[in-house]
Structure formats: C-alpha cells, structure tokens
Amino acid sequence: MSLSATLKSIFGRRATNEEATRNSTPYKDLLARCERQLELVDPDPSVDARIAENNHLLRHARRVTSQEGEDGVIAEVFRRLGVDKGWCVEFGAWDGKFHSNTWTLVHERGWGAVFIEPDEYAFDLLTKNCAGLRDVHCFKELVEVDGPSTLDAILSRSPIPRDFDLLIIDIDGNDWFIWRSLQQYRPRVVMIEINPFLPADIDFVRWNDGQVKSSASLTAVTELGRAKGYELICVVGGNAVFVRREDFPLFDITDNRPTSMFRSRLDMKIFQGYDGTLFLAGNRKLIWRHQLRRDGKLDHVEIADADIQVLPEGLRVFRPRLSYRNAFLEAHANCLNRSRVPGNVLLEHQRNVTSECGEDGILQHVFQRLGISAGYCVEVGAHDGRKSSNSWSLINEHKWRGVLIEKDPAAFTALAELYAGNAAVRTVQAEVTTAPDCCLDRLLTEAGAPRDFALLSIDIEGNDYHLWRSLTAFQPKVVVIDFNPTVSNDVVFAQQDDADVNHGASLLALIRLGLAKGYELAAATAWNAIFIRRDLLAKVGVERNAISDMYYPVFETRIFQSIDGYLSTVGCDRLIRHDYIFDPERLQPLPPNVRVMPFTDGRLGQLKSTFFAP
Image 1: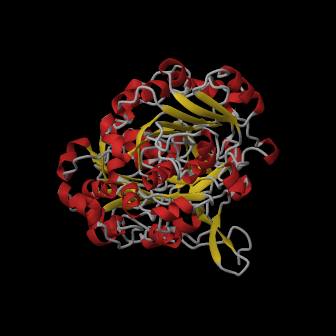
Image 2: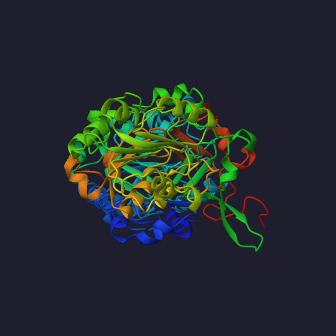
Image 3: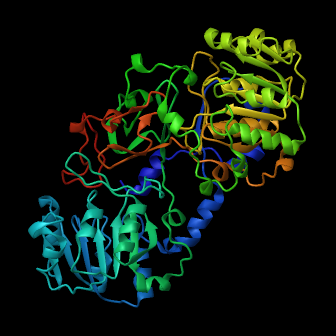
C-alpha cells in the first residue's frame, strides 16, 4: 500500500487550530461538559502555508513508478541542475520498478545505474527488468557500514564516477548510517528515506540492531547532510532530497530548516496522569501492522491505553504532591527557557516567597498593574497555608483578606493554626466538588466572598478544570490553576468530573475553558497557568499569548512508531510523580517476535495480517 493510501485509510479529521477554536467553539456546550475530553488539535494554518512556500518542489510531484511523486521531483531537480543524462544508484532497489525512483531515468532517458538488492526473490526480478540495458550494474548484496560490503566497496566494483548524479537510499532502517559511511563518492543529489510520522523537530537516529527497524528523523538526516556538505531542498512522501551546498541557490528556498519544510502526519501523543497512568492521543493505529478482524475485514492494529502501561494498576496510586518529597519536580519548578516562550513576558517577574514556580512575584506585579494593593483571595487546595502557597505573601505581607480551603485533615490543622486569630482570613475544611452541596459557588457565598474578588487559586491535582468550569456566581479578576505539564501543547485533555480521579487537564483545555468564561492566558510557569479577565488583560502588557508563545511542556514525552511496530520515545523518560524512570520496552504493544518487517516474503506492497494470514 502506498503512503498516500495508508494516510487516507487511517487519517481522520482532527480538531481545528487554537484561533479557530476561539471563534467557533460553542461556549455554552463547553461549559456544560462533565465527561473526559481528549482531542488532538491541528496547528495554525500558517504552518502549512510556510511549509508549502519552502517545500515548493513538491508542486512538481508526479508518479510514473515512484511511490509518492518522487519521479516528478527528481525530474525538476535535474532540470535545474542542467543534467539530462547521468548516473544513479538505488538500494534497496527491489525489482527495479515497483516504487522505483529511477525507472524513468534508466529506461526512458538512458542513465547508467548501480542497483543493489539483497532479497533473492526481488533480485531475480531486478536482473530480468534490467536485462539488455547498457551501463546498468546489479549487485545482490546487503549494504553494510564497514567491511567488504560498504557502499564505497560495492560502487568501486562498477564504472560509476566518483561524483555521480543521484543516490537513492531506501532500506527501511539504517539509511542514516549508510549515508554517513559513504566517504569516497560524492553524488550531486541524495534522496534518503526518513520516518515521515516522526515530528520534524525531533533529532532521532537509532542503529537497527536486529530487534528494531527504526528510520531516522528528518532533523537527524538534515544535520548529517549539512556535515557532509549538503542542503535539504525537498521532502516528498517518506523521502528527503538533498543537493550539494554549492548547488543550493538554484532552488530558491528561503528557509530549509526541517520544521519549515515538513509536518509529520498521523501524530501519536503520549502523556501521564498524576497516578502514573499513561494516555494516548491522536493516531492510535500501527501504520504498517494489520490484523484480520472478527468480521473478516483487514484493518490496522489499534493500540489501547491498557497496552502501553509501564506500571501495574496496583502501583498507579496518587499521592498529593505536597505530602512527600519529590526532588525531580523541585529541581524543575523554574525550568522554563524564556527564549522559547517570547510571549510569556511576565516570567521576568518570577519570585518565590512560598509559591512553587515563581508565582508570588508574577502575581505581585500583576496586581500592581491592576491597581490592587489589598484585595481578596481564594485558594482551593491551600495545604498548610505556607508550603507552595500562592496566597501567603499576599495575606501576610500585603494584608489581603480571603478564604482558604483544604480537604486533608492534617494539612488543614496546620492551616487553621497558622491563621488562628486572623479575622481577615477564613479557613474551611472541605472537599470542593461540582455537586450543589459542596460546590465552589456555595462555599464562597457562605464565606461572603465579593463577586469579583481579586484572586482565585485552584490546585487540587485532578478536578481543577471542572471546579473552574462550575464557578458561575463569581468572576475573579485573576485565576491561577494547576495543569498537567506532561501533555503536549496540541492536545486538549480534561479528566472526567470526578474528585477521585487525579489526571488533571492540559494547558490547551484550560485555555479553551478560559476563553469560554471570558479569560485570557497571561502567564504560564512549569505547571501553573495564570489567567486574567479579558477586560483587564491590556493593563498587564501581555500582547502575544498564543500557547506556542507562552509555554512548552516541560515534561513532555514524544512517541512515534517504526516500520516494525516498535514505539520509540524521546524527551521525559519517567513518571514524574513517582520519579520512576521507565524502560521503553514496557511501552511496547507488540511482543518482540511479532515486531518484524512487514515486507519480507516477495509480496512487496501487499497488506497481510499479523495472524490468521490466508
């Protein structure tokens, strides 16, 4: 099956981008939702527009025998280079015709060629297809990175010139390593296979050791090309095309960084709940792996969340963050790189008195800009009133009034003792939920809170989203709310409305909720978002608050699949609340003896079932 056919068979429509959501979300429906939300959001349309402008050679894509239009791209490349007839190399060439990128060059334009194919069945077909062709040399070998079967060694047994015109590398695995090993030859153009389902910003390459067949990322291949004196000019299908640096100006590309030339498809996302449960978002299907279903239909193998858990259920237990020491989280509480979040200007004012991630300093600056010197605050999940508190400094240093709510008996005892005798502060022991008898509206009404009090802080490590969603009788000026920092910026996730579940919500979900309630994101720290009422935002000097300008997930794990069904990860390598570094093998939905190359029996391109094959 071609890549385009594969995409069509499993690529479903995703949610719109953030700006479209701002304009089209039915807010009243959003505010009424109580079930779990999970969706993957497409990037801003300007991303695809930028890629189309830079990857403009893709407009010439045309299929003769190639898989995704490489024939047309190659023709345009050599037109610009002024090469009419030359020499090409292709390996794994298969039969020389099926998904071949060189058939037209050799059979219609008379190019010389070196074809390399190790599969006996395919090599017999290759020699038959090339019979009688002048200057075509076929080798039945497996190209290695050292020894007598390196690409240099094989090519030296042919008359191909050292500066031949086109090299095609397509071996579904160690392509990166083979190109790196090439030293004695310098082709003008290199087309090399990448993993097209791996995001362009990930630098990933792995030696295929017999257990994993894993193609490299576009970024990894691009960096290798630059080290060898080449520049990226096109990404077509699952292939990247490079030319020598001296020829690059012929192609009129303004920005050839991988992220400006390519966007991966069928993205698979992974994140974790606070109890160590792992979740998937986006594509859940193994692109190259199929199974006959009960009804006899051949379909992609789909992964469930249960297939990727690294901890047994008995170890997936939630404990409140402040009830134990977590050195890993403490070390990363102030880790945002400001150069990566140009819109997050309030980070300049980060300062901790008792807060976790510098919220004390940000809030002090915000209220100064809003002209509030002694306001009213509400903190849900106040703990002992001091440890990681967003209200202690306001109450004790600036004489604020407020109500502090905590459900844990031991923490509440310390909280009540801290403010005993302070008439300006009311402490309440309660588990706040969205139920009428213990909802935030009722508790604040009973406490006599002003309708538009200054600060609401919600930090209950689970149902935070739904508590804010359910607040309708009050409109605080500023809201500080805890979010799940393992969730990617393009995933909308909010756990079900359940006080006994501790998975949290993504920043993007809270941004959507904030927009629905009339709030804008003003700042984001490692795991707390600060929202300001829309009518007040201009006063604090925040101008660019798109999520990509404000935050990157500091504990994000990136996941992607290889042609054999192996799931690889980069980024955060642990369950952050347990500080448990997990083995990627525990993530694998397929057992090792099933993770084999799908095209090994002479039926290249034909789909087959993992089990129950006819």
